[in-house]
Length: 380
Image 1 (spheres, helix red, strand yellow):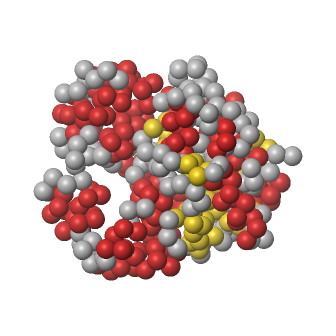
Image 2 (cartoon, rainbow, N blue to C red):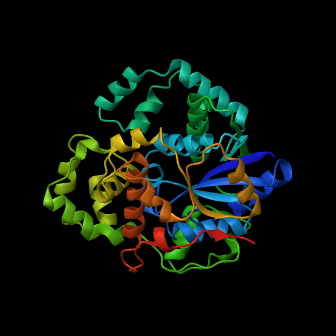
């Protein structure tokens, strides 16, 4: 049994994702594990539709098993996002390959990753940071050992995440092999479309603007759309309460709290992010910090969790059941009744954050405690 894996957000699931799954099936295997972001995603926003619905859509379109990438990872920066997901995939002990989209071929990415690992200077990055540059800009400036072509490759949105996957796989010393599939159609954040392929960003915009999106997704519709603006009043309350330990959040940097306090008169969350972000602090970083504050995502818990990977099932078919049967990691959560068996463990603390995230996500529609009541989607 050959087993492939995908790290995904499916925000939302679209024809490009379906193409990737079909490509893996025709070229390698029918057994595909997807580890999927849950209620909040890496760009620092709530997923446009809930994790249970996205898991069902993925299973209906060819995935064998969909498990959750816990919110402590899925709403973090690219390094933590990748490390957390790969740590869980590796814990299966039976997964052979990780597939991901990229603008360039794998050999080019591997060469660049090798150069970076051998030459990057943390001191130089800190120097550029001290001059007021963002982390991304500082890291780019510190890579003067790369050619111009290699620097351009690094600007590809899919390539950036692909390199984080490659780095995490190497650090983990896992047997999982990286395999790239050239992205079909448009780039990750493109506002353009190609035939029936469009980026998730474009599709989200079409949905929010009540424009036609159906040519770009398999046969399903959207309802109960979620946006970061939904949580602005909660954020303002937490900030004015002035009981936040900012130091324990990954995306915090000294002085950011002042920019937040000074802009509480913003009209909504979008306006707030625009006012708080700067040349040094990207919009995505500010939004991830907001999620960390809303969910109180302590970086120490994230570090501790790496040694306690669990497998939380969101959806599966017969092949998914077979994969779970052979998994070396038996810390598998199907029914959430198992939650009560964890006592005061790292697992329970991570699950508590997942429960909180699901409830915060659904606050406006009143659907509480879905982690306990929602059943795993099983395709017969």
